[in-house]
Image (cartoon, rainbow, N blue to C red):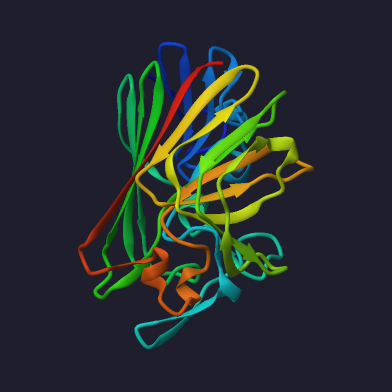
Amino acid sequence: MTMTDTSAPHTSAIELNAGALRLALRPDLGGAIAGLWFDTLPVMRSSEPGDLVSSRLSACYPLVPYSNRLGYRRFKWLGHDYTTSANFDDNPHSVHGVGWQRAWRTVQCDTGAATLAYEHAPDAHWPFAFAAEQRFELTPEALTLHLSVVNTAPHAQPVGLGWHPYFPKRSRSRLHAELAERWDNDASGLPTRKVAQPGIDGDISHLAFDNCFEGWAGPARLRDERLSLRLSSSLPYLVVFTPGNKPYYCVEPVSHVSNAIHMANPAAHGLRSLEPGQRFDAWMKLEIARA
């Protein structure tokens, strides 16, 4: 492990190494992964940590305290109305929570692991206090991520977790995932109806998804001409984003359907109600091998 100060004030990068794998973190940029490499080959979309200028351009960032879109920056909870602020260009919704846009502090790091923490005070972007923690564990075969949140507010609050990894498109990039149903979206990206989806098994270049999926079973398999990846998680939903005009695609384990807080029964769509002091833990594992 190395910790390197960059030229930016109050900025530090953490690097972990295990076998052929190298992981670079930027705690100050949303607790994001700047890069993950197998030898010199990027496993995720990767930047040297000193070159990364925004968590939005990173390899992966945490989704806390909700995943994807929170519709029209407002919601009702336990009889009270709340609003959130714009945080994603001119999107009419708030997107991906607050953790990815805040500085995290380094709690612990050693040769193969690091722990980051973030304490949230109520603000215009999220009205409830919480404490979040990320742990990164690197072995020669895999990267395992742990994410947890504790409700530090004096009353129950809605909580969701997830990760937003970006994978580079390469020759013969392919995704296989066992799924049951897909949420279709309106023009603004909010889910409107659930339809049958008998899994995904195809070349990334032929896929056109920006959807949340239910019924995820077993690891998702991501393959190309260079690497073979197995993505597994404790979380039951999967968001798949395959933009045709970008050099990356995303396969995101998440705890709830996008905009679940506006659905008739948020808990039935994965959103948690955490009581004061209650904790929600999740993990994601990415196993990495040569193709």
